Length: 397
Picture 1 (tube, rainbow, N blue to C red):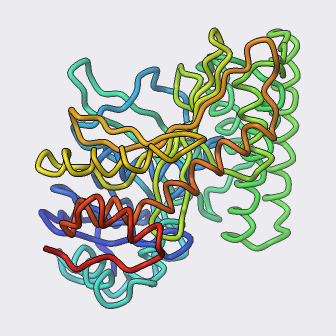
Picture 2: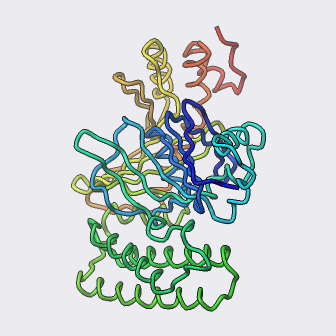
Picture 3: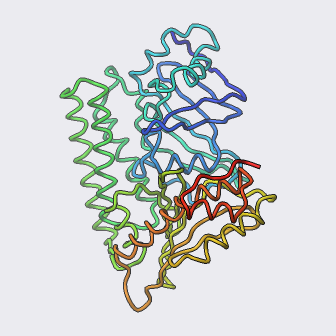
């Protein structure tokens, strides 16, 4: 049986899996697992891992289900903490844990012996809170699941009135903290809330249960009234001519998952190439009427390799027509940039598409060469030759 005990895992790793079964390692100094009627997992991750979680919507952290409680950006340090709750019907997998260390040890053993176990699937966990301690204090946000915690809703305490109130509370706080109001975004958030929760209820309880139907109907009726009131009071004005809006429309229509950076006209995205996955940023510079797209190379150049990689990138850039590689000599970050100035004209989906896909294809083409120079000691000239001639790379020095 599961006892009401908190278990701590120190200086050990657990590898979870995302939807595509790609590993998501959790390197944490404090990882707690608290099994009661609810199973709660608290872990710490670095900023890069967190950005992957947000971009891919892991731990049921879809953009529309994130609270808008933080007006600040997360810093590279310290680590970011996520508290998540386990999908209730998976608690049975922990039912045989009897000692104070079993639940935590069980998770670690699973990550080594059964990496595809449901307990290690990020979609089996619902993120409740995301926080980071900074000099100015703690920042972060609560998610939709903190208001309607799957681990605390049972057949015995199911209340349609409570569900409606909590859904309205989450939605209203989302709107109150929003920098801008857009009717399409309001509708999208409303649809995501209703669809996500309805799907969860129907997979958790008996499908067609009258109480479930009543709860959803009551909540959606109240939410629809709230949206109408907000739209009327705010007199939402949509500016479809802005570069930022055109940018959002393109990535939405082209089926990219993205995150809007708080207070900035920037979208954060991810791209999976043939050779690796990396983070991208799309930026609207409204005053200058410019659109910029960056791919951030997944490998950074250490100080000892910056001269070599600078030569490699210079050799590559010499022959490029659209876009170029850039190297930050202060921290070794490598990125590829494509951009366009549309002053006196307008930005179209066709222009964005050309810049975006030229960008990611160039990174994917030259990424093996970058890694060969950084990690295998291959000379810049040899790396360029191997790419251009489609050869394998020389062995490491």
